[in-house]
Image (tube, rainbow, N blue to C red):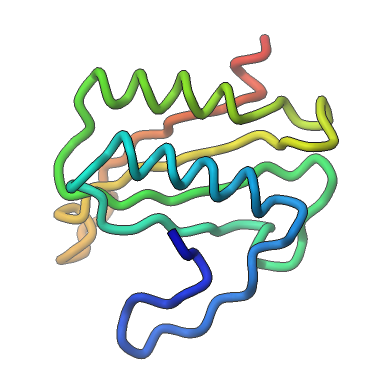
Length: 128
């Protein structure tokens, strides 16, 4: 999955994924793609990683858009396997905390406020 290619007409060309998080981000995207299958619409990297403010303890923020709600099995698999790819803030020089937010496309188009969402992972909470 190439997160550097804009998919929508008129979309801005995104900044490159910072090299320090590229492998972990791509692994998380492969996992999300495998678990969500045909229901996946998009994965967006957002937050400090693309805003230019990535710090040593910053997490990796992924916004996932799907067409059908996650099943309990999909949700549990994503949480467990994303936790395996992540580390609590500052615990590892190689991996970072991951935060995944999943939204339904039907809750975004047409826009309604607030959209429903699932927060998949708060690694700092998981370490407690």
